[in-house]
Amino acid sequence: MKSIIRISGLILLIPLVLTLLAIWHWKPGSFILAFVLLIGGAGMAYGLVTKKLLSNKPYRFAVGLALAAVLLLVWMNAAVGGILGDNPANMMYFGVLLVGCIGAAIAGLKPEGMSRALFATAFAMLIVPAIALIIGTPAFDNGVVAVFGLHAVFALLFAGSAMLFRKAAV
Image 1 (cartoon, rainbow, N blue to C red):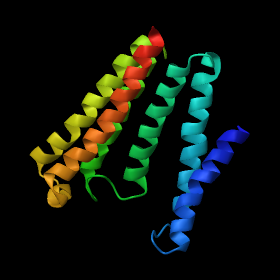
Image 2: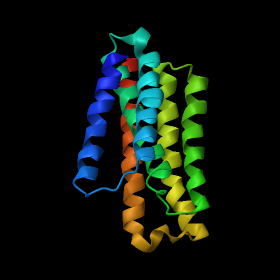
Image 3: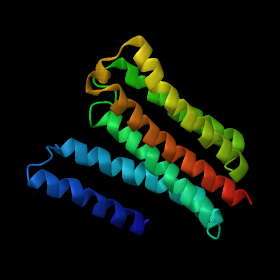
């Protein structure tokens, strides 16, 4: 637990320095949310899931990568103002996370099933901008390529985690 707190503190130094330099404009609530997400969310989940599988490095890396993607996705929607702008369409990301959570529960956290769950999560992530484009969200003011590109990055993170889970199953 001490290492999780240390790592989270080091990560939070980045936005703190950038806020002090007036490059970013984080409020105290943003730091609290980030700390809670890092410690309570990602850090604790990583520790609990990987506790029994300390020798399986691909599994540990897969969990870490998936949790990092989830953390970034939640952070971008909670603190940054939403990937799709200030729009109710951002609720679709909870559906993406739900796909991953239900898949993990069905898989019982076993590597083979986790691989399938993370591939499904990657696919769900790719569907979001297509639905957003169809319903006409204002997020595409920044360009269709930018929105689809950001979603592709998240999908690649989830797919990379899926590949690591597949390797852990061997």
